[in-house]
Amino acid sequence: SGEESWWRDAVVYQVYVRSFRDSDGDGVGDLVGARERLEHVAELGADAVWLTPFYPSPMADGGYDVADHCGVDPLFGTLEDFDALVERAHALGLRVLVDVVPNHTSDAHPWFVEALGAARESPERERYLFRDGRGEHGELPPNDWESVFGGPAWSRTADGQWYLHLFDPSQPDLNWRNPQVRADFREVLTFWLDRGVDGFRIDVAHGMIKRPGLPDTGLRQQIGMLGRAELPYFDQDEVHEIYREWRGLLDSYSGDRIGVAEAWAPTSERLARYVRPDELHQAFNFALLEAEFSAERFHAVVDESLRENCRVGATTTWVLGNHDVQRPVTRYGGGDVGLRRACAAALFSFALPGSVYLYQGEELGLPEVLDLPEEALRDPIWERSGHTSRGRDGCRVPIPWEGRHPPFGFGPEGSTESWLPVPEGWSELSVRAQHLRTESVLRLYRSALALRRHHPALGDGAHRWVDAPEAVLILRREPGFVCATNFRDEPVELELPGELLCRSDRVDAAPSWSGALPGETTVWLRQDR
Ligand code: TEU
Image (cartoon, rainbow, N blue to C red):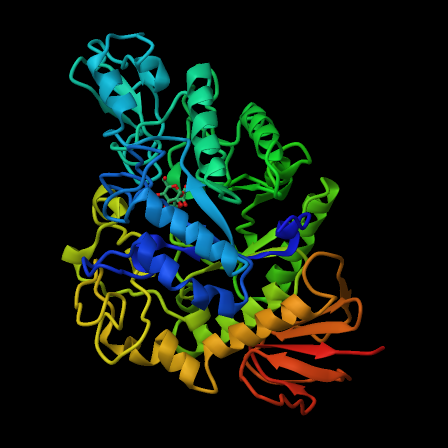
């Protein structure tokens, strides 16, 4: 602790609390469960955990519909459980980031309940974005904005006014031009900082400020363009004022507390604005996650991400997955091929300058579960999309810990409950099974992250591309470290002198190197010259 800028090259492990570990047998992961399994995270070699929302919530959007920002939902435990988790994490050398959800609240939040019961233009309604509708009787939504989850971004209240919700109708958007809202959130942040958290992951950090007048977009399709198009409800310049204020608050605490933006911006340059020196420390860089598995794309993404972040003096982050997107193994083609590519991409990303965000289960090579029964689906996207999208539940399936039968030790001994069914075939993917095998994705991640932690060339710093055959990327980092990835599905003959440290296609006690770089594989080498 006390070490400056720990986050610049940190490995942060995302705990999706609901699916990590269930301590009481109700089929839902909880804070006690998370605390009991922090050793797994420490042993993996992470520097911090990010906990997804555990606040009181009707759980319409997995807890991103917050009804009380300063409490713990009984489903997940108590504030005492939270304190115990933080204490344990710190004892293990892990920092703790928590989610803060400032763009919207749950419709069950007392603020919104009061707003609904209050008069038009009352201070209670000014907390949110209430507007009169269009059309002769105000029967049409105030503008053409669409919800990220599908359908119009407006819902009508009993007295005829409409309220804005960029996500589910049960997630009304707050009015961040209202000083009261800003003051309320300062209190929320202060509450958790005082409880010892090391920072915040800021949900929809690009969404809080809407363009004055709430103008139409004029676009026919808005959802698919998330993050790419310029939209009047995302990435408005004034949103940065909020982060300047929050930075001041974070800096008033000792211990290098940080803010990480979940921001989707149209360009790398726009994204880098969130990490200017007087704003947030990090922003998720989703460029690698969105790139297909190709040398060209990966090369371009790295150069562009680093260029823009360097300009403002920040490091970047590397993200291959989270609780909102299809798991990398499946995204890269599924099966053995997908797994090979996911491991190659992971090792590639661990060798880059900056910090790494890992989503629970990536270290096990878990695939997306594509065949969840429809009655099991809980993501609001499933309903809101009119069943055209199955939503995000497939990457939220509980972690298999051990044993032969689902849910593989997700809950306490003897419990068979899990809020989403865990596939029968996951026995060999469990933490215990992979720990016991000499060859496993878990072992690969552990050894790679240990090397990353101890090798002076890795983490923060500079890199240089080395000339390479087509479809191969070779990256050099000083002192004496080389990372080579072959994106082709066939081996490539390659002159790479040096001592082999690690290879993504295999875990060996004494890794060997024959001169051909296997297809879809990353290797790490130590070179004295
Ligand atoms: O996500 C914000 C977001 O805009 C997307 O990740 C979106 O959920 C996805 O593209 C839909 O396909 C954050 C949270 O990570 C997500 O879980 C929440 O549902 C959302 O905010 C609302 O709070």
